[in-house]
Image (cartoon, rainbow, N blue to C red):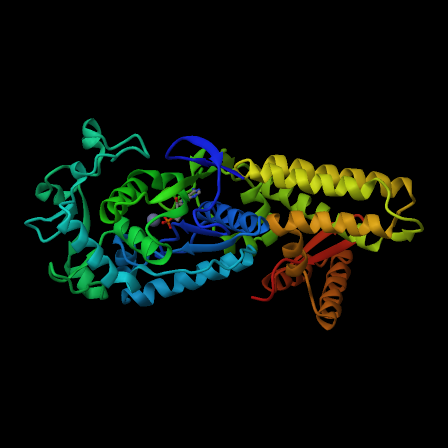
Length: 478
Ligand code: AMP
Ligand code: ZN
């Protein structure tokens, strides 16, 4: 398979360093608040890559960290009157819930930065010994950017003339170069208040954010990892700094491929907490959207292309997922015609191969989806022509192809599982739906609305169609 590497700016063949075993690190959520669906665009691409690598037969060590100590988590804990760990726990759990809701395969591990402080201290000591870091008068330890020749190679930023672009804050007075960044920060009163302080050779303090990822990545995956991922905003300075720290400490290339996911936008602006234009997964579920539709929305564009979030887009995604669910049902339930496989069976195999080849081209999902829809169209045409029946061998081949595609897309099973309801529950829901129709018929809209709201809190969405009210379960219980 080919992947686009942001460092060399080329798309080239990917082979893991160790045959059959791929080491991947993706920058994970900063657990100071609920992750929004912009964050989840990036994480959904992690899952896509994870699944595609597994389809290739690789074992994947996929590490996604929790940034559970940084300025935002500390401020968040202080504002909530909680200890750091108490504050971040909520959002660690929320992330894991949302990841499950969106059907992510479990990642191999989710290290928390706070569990790696001794390793971080040792890492900084190594950098100081090698002349790549220094203790400043304010008690911070800084990375000495001029000591690393390749600085700026990833982002094209941070060269000498870019020095002014580096974030300037009060600490800069103690830096030897404005581009230098903190590896260790001396304890502030707020850090002590929330318990975000650790002992070190440089006194009580806490690690810098960039350092955290270098240490977790190299501790868990070794000096050189195969693929490092993150959202495009992390290219500079975060990833540039990760490279500088890691390569200075180990003397080895840090990551062989760098993948950066373009931001999810809303009305042409980045979806972000600070702009206040964000939605969380749970908000969209509460509005009645299906997890599979959210997943589809996040994955249907190529990860290096623009993706603009709209309600219309989500509605289209809902319709696409429904079409696939209906299609699979139609094939499963198709009556069996006598005889062996027709040309449908090999065609299905070809479409599956085309789907895989598209993903091999730097995870080209739009091209892969074209193969999927061609399969759907051809099979539907054949079913129509044969009065809704098909040969058993054809059916198996089509279902296999569909399963192979969904092993990576992960929407059909997800849609079906999120709608599963126990029979008894089904009867009760149907009774409420009937009561609501009755109420509407007598223009008792207050009752009708009350029933709709009540069902919504259980995760059931009603749709009034010409043939009556249809209901779907979009999630389980409140
Ligand atoms: P954070 O929780 O801010 O550390 O971000 C977690 C991940 O989400 C990082 O890889 C970010 O680059 C990524 N990210 C943040 N905003 C967006 C967005 N609007 N679209 C896609 N990815 C994003
Ligand atoms: Zn990171």
